[in-house]
Length: 239
Figure 1: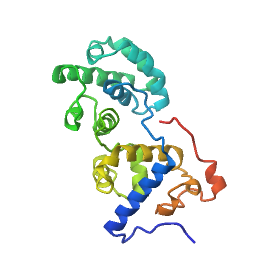
Figure 2: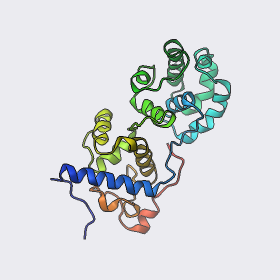
Figure 3: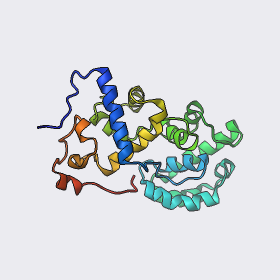
């Protein structure tokens, strides 16, 4: 008997219940889910998240100890020698654009917020180089303000789960946010990202080793044999 869940004609109530059940199971599957970027304060997380674009968290975490030791405040970044900053972050890729973003962000924090990283979505996305994804990472993990982080893993899983058909990140954020209690948004983001990195891969999801297979309308996209699927499961840290 197929374990595929049919979402065609699924009522709104049934969708909400299924989404919340998936969230609960993923909470049990990944009790230690967390942001995999190393940071000690909002500024460090903001900088690390900017660096994480098109780069693995592992690589960012290799770069940031030297970076954070040299630049401790927004004023330090704002006054940074561009060549020196570029050299430190070179291995994260797109280092010139990221240097522009970091220096521009730091200058704005100094000019507009008295050198303190702001704690609202509106203020964060107004900073150079900071979009909604970066802002929600900082809000959820540095300020305990619930936010949904729509990266490639989150958007892929949200569609596979039948929570949304959207491809636009903002629309995905709002549609998924309507299904899950706000208090759960940050942890939901971690859980979906962890599951996407470890099990529900883009090309060959490990369906036969998936803890939410019975609730997933995309079950069968990847191998369903437990042994074969088990070989596809990966361990972190990831991009």
